[in-house]
Amino acid sequence: MDGVSLRGRIRPLWLDVGLTVLVVAVQLWPFLVSERTWDWRGYVVVVVSAVPVLWRRQAPVTALLTSLLATSLYDFTGTVPDQPIWYGGLIAAYSVAVRSPRWLRLSMLVATVGGSLILNSSQTALRVAVLFVAVYATGRAAATSRAHAERLEHEREVESERAAERERARIARDMHDILSHAVSLMVVQAEAGPVMLKRDPAKAEAAFEAIASAGRDAMVQLRRILQVLHTDEQPQAAPQPRLADLPTLVAASDMRFETTGRPFPVAPDVELAVYRITQEAITNVIRHAAATRAEIHLGWETDAVTIEITDDGTAPDVVRKGNGLIGIQERATACGGVATAGPRTDGPGFRVTARFPTR
Image (cartoon, rainbow, N blue to C red; front, side):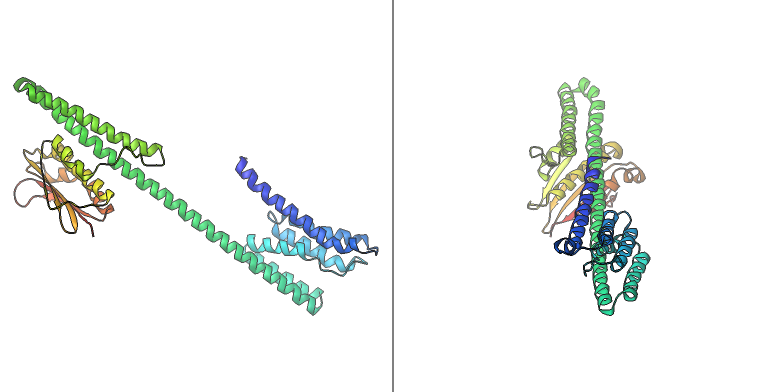
């Protein structure tokens, strides 16, 4: 048993011990302050009626029956103070209302009230009925409130788990985008490097530098993701890629990049989505398109930001559509945007378009 669960059991136990002592003290008080000599059996019944409070959580029905039995014997024990000794029974009845099944708690309520009507005068029976019904209602209200709180806590836990799953999926997509893009660039440049080395050493040097740059960029971005995984706070010194980083991304792939419209501030998640979609589209062009030309267009509209990647590749559409398109669509949808991909209608090749409304 761990420390937390042990403390959780000790605290209710001490509460019940305190309640038992309090009930015994209150019910014995008339015995102690009077100069009369009372029947010793009265003392016993008073104590017995209160002791069941100690096990009211584990066996509430047994506690209630024991307390009520002792209470019913009080008036038959000889010379005793004229007082009610219902307190232990009321506390046990509260536990029955909170912890017992519906049929059992209602049966106990009916039996308690009915027994009081049989054994007591009408005035006393009415007081007993009112007290036990009030205690029953209080117990049910407490049980309902507790159940509602537990349900809310469960819903919070479920939502927390779902948020963690979404975050893991996002990180997995980011790692896929980063690694596939970097590795694709490195493979293309590495394959072209030996040829360039023979024909144009200067271009070969640039190709090898591009390989190193792609590797460094991938390491930096992976480090950002790992920092997020190892700390509860976003690292302040390592911001996510933004739209301003697109020219650098495109330049590393030797593609044409153009912008139209006047830039304006957009949400950070939209900036990241545009960057990752562009990165994935570039990766697909390099790996699958067999293209000789590719263009990337960033458009600033009045109420939206659009990114369009086109190429003149000849790879089968079925191959191209299976690589990263789902991730592109998920990224766009998560930010309230729409992404499409398919063959160009104005010539050979493929087109990926994503549009993000900003108003």
